[in-house]
Image (cartoon, rainbow, N blue to C red; front, side, top):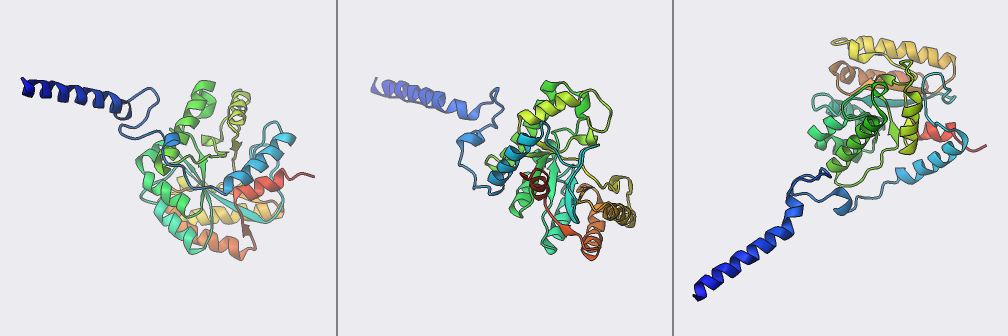
Length: 287
């Protein structure tokens, strides 16, 4: 009899314990990973010195411009001899590490506009990008043309990418830079631009396009073609005495092969490397 009571009591305790732990191990509508607490409830991340400065830039920008951005189609950028390196579509295990190696060898920082689906597959690469001092920007989750989406789906693409970045890092990294795939709806002549601008403004994001595009993604197997495109764009930019935002992709071998020569060219031409935060701060500097 005593043995039977002990068995029943043990069974009761197991049921109670399972009920207590179940919320942490089951899937839910919030999308928490099985067995992992939400990022906001886990250990806080290290302080990010970039964020307070970018917050001040946002405050200054929004006071002057209802739709703050940089290098978007038909809108002025900044004047000078600086170059900001940006890379889209990664991280990619075949090529992103080589690009990071080149940047580290030259002690340079860049902005990586990442895809959420790539971050989800390669969280370790995302962590390396951040650890080595580069900036992360939102490039949507699926590389979807934003001009073809509803407002709800635009927000979803951006939110899922933010969640993927936070999951990879284990803390909240507030992305403040965003590049829409294909440059749309800025470049596609779409009537979705007002909706898109509202979405990114509501989320405190700066849309960033580019001023120089060597179309590296088309030059498969021809790194020298990428370099030639860079030289032509640089000559045009110097004639206009403008800062440049360079569009590259860290998903192509020819780009990784060309990057050391690209860096050498800019250093030899008197350009100074800068990050996007610096260019934004100058564009929206208070009078």
